[in-house]
Length: 352
Ligand SMILES: [Zn+2]
Image (tube, rainbow, N blue to C red; front, side, top):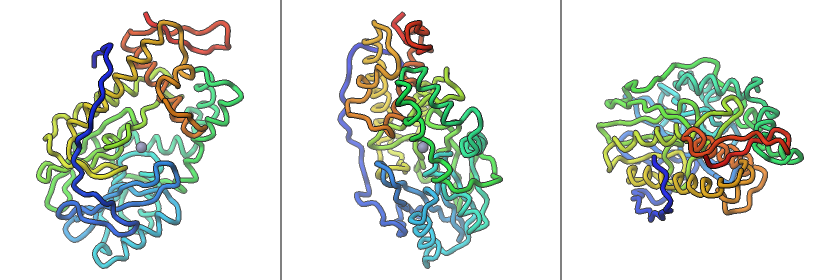
């Protein structure tokens, strides 16, 4: 991606073939043998979509919701229904975030089906759950302080991300590994593993060529831009570059592929959506670069990135996003980094 001075507005004309989401516990069919389920989430983002794929009389579950009573009641209703009370053959998890992996262990106990996922997602989930030194709240606090979040706010913001264990309950203790380009035979169809990063380390999407359907997880959402953040275990990382490279691969899919996203409604218009997201990040990078004629830290540029007022929970994700954009410009050679001498070790970025 090249940086340009202009900003572009995009007018979305995605096609949404299904205008109404399913009710909790009552899946609806989106294609022969593919059923769309909904679960509530107790956040501003108030729902997640999960998928049930018919597999020669059995069912494959893709993603699981958070481990709370509401979501588990929904699963019980689905798995006890006449249509879906079949044996579960696989539990596939797209990535480690709690709304996706939350009930994997519970469903594994309930159904005896194995959990299938990529290795980095499985292992990173353990690191977050067990609060390994690389994944503690104090490591996040230190990262945010280094990037300018005032010390008296930093720990309370870092603690906003400290709910993983509550939302997951327990993690699967074993898994079957999926790697890029694996072909999973489900029912009469093959689903190809498309592995991406930037949102999480080895996020799994699944593409079925025969059906021209992509189960996108969080990598391609119709209305919101996926969170892309720097975390303390890789403070110099470039997740935005990884994310943009990853979604670029969706341009190789047919333009009329039906996208089944984890949030929002299924849609057609993958190529357009990828370009909108690329433009969105390009605009943000250009805005940041323009103000980096003076040294800036990640906290200082938040009003440039986010027009709305941010509460502590939103600030948690916004700080990681802000650092991701600055690291992108740093890796691209557009800005250099300065350790400030005036304020304790805060890192500033300034145009080369
Ligand atoms: Zn996610």
